[in-house]
Length: 129
Image (tube, rainbow, N blue to C red; front, side, top):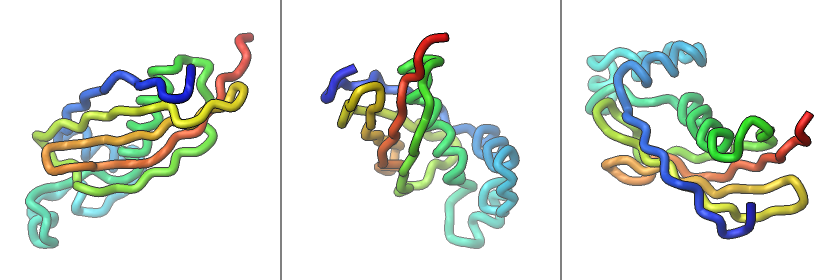
């Protein structure tokens, strides 16, 4: 792992099931994450993914790439364009810093409307046991 290394992109189909299951798993029962009519009444064309689901997918992207020794220390993200059903989010990343066994990766997740998520993930690689 070196500064500047690019992570391969990860395509995540944004399904209605993923959005609803992520909201339920994170105990986010706001209607905009499961009820299309309520989401429309509030100005959205459909339900949309919550930040906790996005946060989990960003963490998964990093741990899947760097392996089971990866320990997430900090995930700092900002949401932009919403993830609606039927779209695809493509996560990409670039290693920004490496200090010993700790690194920070800059993450961008795009969908058909623009950047859904931007931010950084700081992690370390624990020693093999």
